Amino acid sequence: MTEVAGARELGREQLLDAYRTMRTIREFEERLHVEFATGEIPGFVHLYAGEEAIAAGVCAHLDEDDYIASTHRGHGHAIAKGCDVKAMMKEIYGKAEGICHGKGGSMHIADLDKGMLGANGIVGGGPPLVCGAGLSAKVRGTRQVAVSFTGDGGSNQGTFLESLNLAAVWGLPCVFVVENNGYAEATSTNFSVRGLDIAKRADGFGIPGVVVDGHDFFAVHEAAGEAVERARNGGGPTLIECKVNRYYGHFEGDAQTYRAPNEVEEIRREKDCLMLFRRRVVSAGLVEEEELDRIDDEVRNLIDEAVEEAKAAPDPSPEELLTDVYVSYQG
Image (cartoon, rainbow, N blue to C red; front, side, top):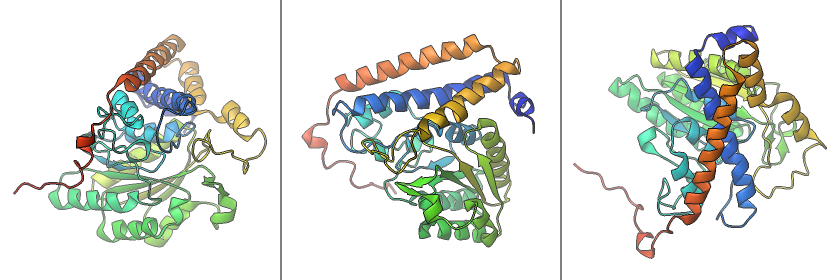
């Protein structure tokens, strides 16, 4: 597929929506990088900047009642699945009006109404969850799809490999996305993964495995579209490996001494997914640059408002401490 052909498969509004999703994730994360340094945000923060094309490309194919399970680096997935940005910001600030009432914070953002099963502090914790969601969809015949996002480090967990096997054996409507950003915390994949591609592990379970450039929205979008369609139509699971880079450390405060000098600067200059997207759609005459600039301004204003409202929002009361601990099932 040529660069222009890949862009032309999407309509103008779809292209603008995709760009807005990626720009919202980028601005959300860049702003958090600044705000975290003030000391006002509790807990840990793991930023998704640089990987926006993956969340946007995958979630573009999902309906509101489809499910995703995320990682500790989950803001981008939540935004791409339609979670409210202002409620997310309040959650990260630990406020009562947050999407989880201030009890989850950055690493545990969830919104079941949007099919977002949650960011997850357990490495490799998402794949078993989507097996459950996929089994539920299959039994009920709903044509829903469940997608897990897992890092290269998480792909070495037994939970990941067991989930691939379970989904394959039961023919579950699941898609397993590996975001291979090259580092499991501070350990390069050169030391932790044998072989060239994580996606080749799919062969051992008899399911399709594909590798795509995670900086390329259109490559991700195409692969995810085929995988989601296969899952919806009863074709079972797919493993997609997206090779990508993150712009910030494993967590905010990470000195990143394990990275080469100027590594991130070179990636930003040569492989930035937003830059590549803009270049492709504008050069193909599919979208005017002014339209993208207008989205940039609108998103920047949205994030400014989100931060301002989050800082002014009320903290949870002590009475709320023991609520939301147990689920009450009604007969």
